[in-house]
Length: 436
Image (cartoon, rainbow, N blue to C red; front, top):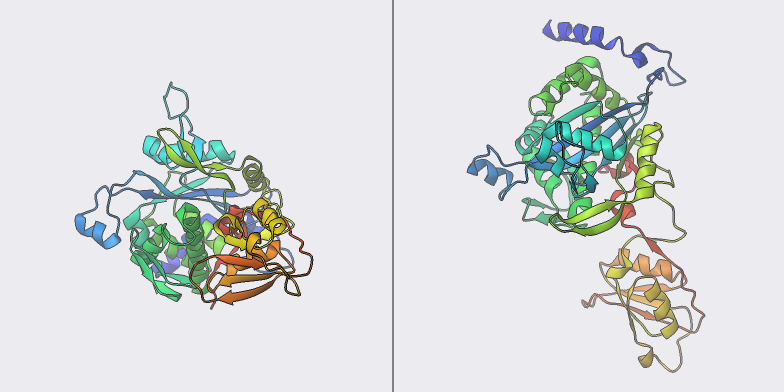
């Protein structure tokens, strides 16, 4: 009886939501478009604070050391106006921005890492700072800490993580084997916090956080936890036990958001990270920061403001003629032809010219790339620059690639490596989620 009463109460609250009562399109199960507005923006943050944690809790959560009392995770979720698409954008914690002015402040606005806005003015200043640097209005705000995240994942039934190779990070406590794993809140926290695994740093961690969220949404949807107002209310109630919201966000709002997300297919849920132009911008007194790519990041915010998809938008992520999947600067190459060596060096490869030791008579055929076993991705990058070359794996352990030029002419193609592609390109959830 109580479940029925809750359901009726929620339906009476939700019936005024325009897309629930308007005409549907050719998909009878799809919500209809709303008449006005440009979608809904939700800011989700995870804080880095050890305040109130006992020594035992710190050991259990593997969060020793001093917290920064800042935001450790920041995701902006945009629900389209017709509720047929969700775009989830991660804002890296080290983004160098100008903060919004705190209430009552008379001094000029400060600049710093975006995660520091929370320390200055808690959630309200974090929200206003995101609004200032993105030009988007934030409609709802959700915040949790280490224990809140752990409890939320546990209350929602755990999470799925997957990896094609073992992952171990002493700082976060992550230690999992290759494969697919169902983890509790503690395991999910370790996975989400890991920064010292490949790809390293904050952007690699952010992509793993996106993958974790994509799989949690898929699992909640598959279990019917977001399938109707009552189920969505039950899920929202569990979330509210460990997640704080602003005064504009209540149970009904979370039900609406959850129900919207639960009705989306994986190809209608997008994930991206703000495009970066400088990955190690040093600022005195602040340290290493990230600078947003002005043109691409503005295109990202413009797309969300206009309620457009972000995947496939070449203004956000231009498509190079020949894309390098890994960083040429990290690939050491010995080349026995001076001209080819020079051309590869212009492409950014770490080249040693060994033409002085080249054979007097070149072997018949195209160039041959000899590479260490396990470096297939780097071999593909080098082969993209030498499209006619043959590849040969070797068991040697010196981690150096050799290019032996043959009798045929060699064309060196210009390749483009964009770290934003590898670690934060706009993609749909079906390309992020763990495969069955």
